[in-house]
Length: 179
Ligand code: HEC
Image: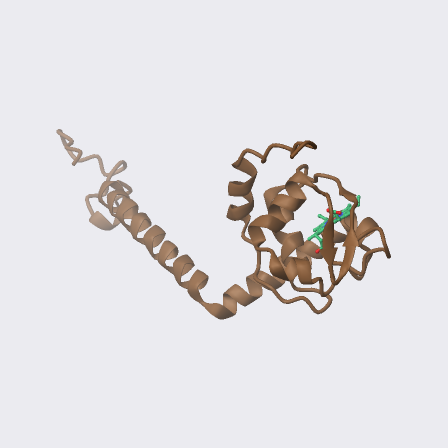
């Protein structure tokens, strides 16, 4: 505490506690209180994450944002309704191939591109899908969540952290033609 010697100067300090502007104690209490608020906020965030209704709404947001990415990046090839182009671009709508692969492989496909033979709904395609690693982790998570949940597809949302993790992995070396 601050100690002041000499006669009381009532202009500076009336002597009544209520007028005191010295906030030492309260400020200390404030940091404790701030800590408590922060930990309560963290608890709320944790609770929200575990709430299936909120998780569902989060997925809806991802789908909506992902649609915008799809309409800028993927639709030129896969078409607005995910129907693809006969003989050239495989469909994403009700694609049995899409239903078979996990989110990690879907992420890798967008980051590294795709080439080589692929059979989708009984038809064989052999084209080139360009790597789209210029998209952000969030954009990739959202666009794949949109694809997973559109045109009759139903799948899990794709987490941003998963895209971050897959991006860090060294891409597998290209297959040799002499294998
Ligand atoms: C330049 C055209 C092009 C663009 C743009 C493109 N794709 Fe593809 N995509 C292809 C082709 C071609 C294949 C088949 C590749 C092969 O033959 O191995 C394919 C295959 C796929 C497959 C696996 C096969 C299937 O139909 O289930 C997925 C999933 C996919 N693309 C998702 C996407 C997503 C998501 C985007 C946007 C971020 C995207 N593609 C953008 C051309 C494209």
